[in-house]
Length: 230
Image (cartoon, rainbow, N blue to C red):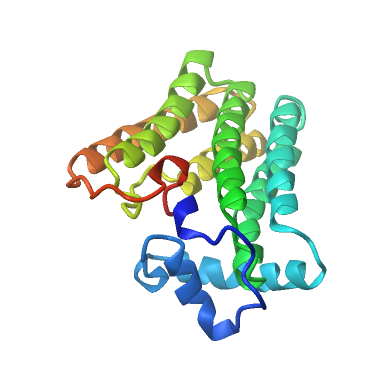
């Protein structure tokens, strides 16, 4: 979502359940969650969790911070405790969905929250790439992977196509990190992490091509402070 799409102050009142898809679409450049495979089911689960967190008074930015903390914990655990690291990766991914859900359900979406979420996403991308390195991927390969992730995000902004979904999105990077950790259950070797890093980088290359083949969009207000749809 772009910061320009969000109110500068929290909206009054909580959202009714029937309004949630429309509210989500409004802050994600008009994307219809029902037309993206699995997205609708994922969002319904996140809205349930977001509703519970909102009722408990948990601010969305606290969930965002927790996600970054879990991503950092995954890096610290990856070398000696890969299963725990995988759980931390999964927890970080859940927080990434729950912070926005909490904001939308509770009517607390703000510009500062959107910026914080965008920064948290990039930090988590870097942490997940470090997980691959800690699991045995070469340093240059992990660096190339995170460069691909950040490159896709940057190119999407430059071409002003925030609603263009590619194969190089955060679920892809999360799955690569999870598989690199989970592979320790069946193999002590380093090749699974190396393969995951290669898949991540390959997805990034395809994502760049997808964006380059997408016609540039018109200039949008506040695009520099914005973030791509997810």
